[in-house]
Length: 365
Ligand SMILES: Cc1ncc(COP(=O)(O)O)c(C=O)c1O
Image 1 (cartoon, protein in one colour):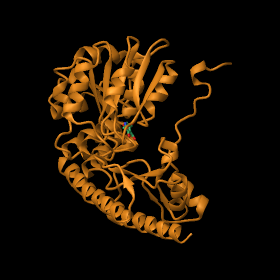
Image 2 (cartoon, helix red, strand yellow):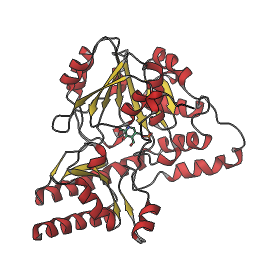
Image 3 (cartoon, rainbow, N blue to C red):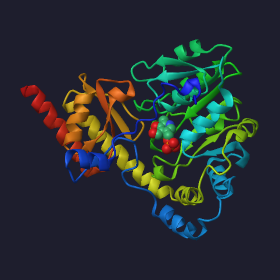
Image 4 (spheres, rainbow, N blue to C red):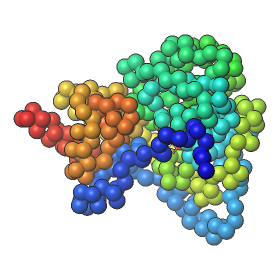
């Protein structure tokens, strides 16, 4: 038996530590998990009610074309239903596009560090991965353009970028799209779209009419608080979606997930409230960092990368031993800091108290 060569030496995704794991390992009862950029306020009550209504239909396969959700999202975005591709999370949308476009002899261009699934799936498809270092935590679009050649199939723009939270503005994105050669697909991953407050952040859906090669990705996992259900989607031209649809599994989003996403989309008041609270809490982190002389990347998301200019693992472990799970920058390609999901107020109180304590202890050392 031999798995294909591209899988050899590739590690499975390493998730952040789970609450149960930390409870067991450290003998703690109260754990705060701020490692996966989930919504600390949960999801809309309407989504839960929609799930309950589906519980008598579990023996029946889901609607493979997700018609109700398709209609809802198409109306929400002002696009045609045929411009949408649904995935088991946007993770699967990444996988579908890689499967459809990448093969040996092709290459794909992305920032580094950025969301790791672009690279991971490209490796499985045996495409060359061209990583272009961020500059000050931001995409270096000029260098990304320079990395494109006739064998490039996909360029990824994670906007805002994970793990830095930084963004590409409208003028920058337009100038980039104007110069990307027409044979290259540009996937703009907007997993944190709802959290963005910057006025010059690009509205990409209208740009789909101007740029044939553009794909926009969004998810129900972040602001909509439905990470457990796995629903994300891509939006592109009808022709592009038609071309990649055969690479999608027939029943890739569940009945429950579809129903919950439909209901969640109707509750925009929930999203507005979460985004407002997130902004207020994020600004508390900014103030804290400024008061304590800590560097951070200004964020358009529900997470913040704090650069301690020392070993990120040390900060990670200090917080972990005290019941707070964040993500060490070591695992994310930024070894001197940690990425913290912006939690609810009491959770952030605890994180900030612990970081202040750590800084005091380090000064004494
Ligand atoms: C930038 C980015 N894209 C995509 C995803 C995947 O989200 P999901 O598969 O839950 O839709 C994430 C999750 O962390 C992310 O940060």
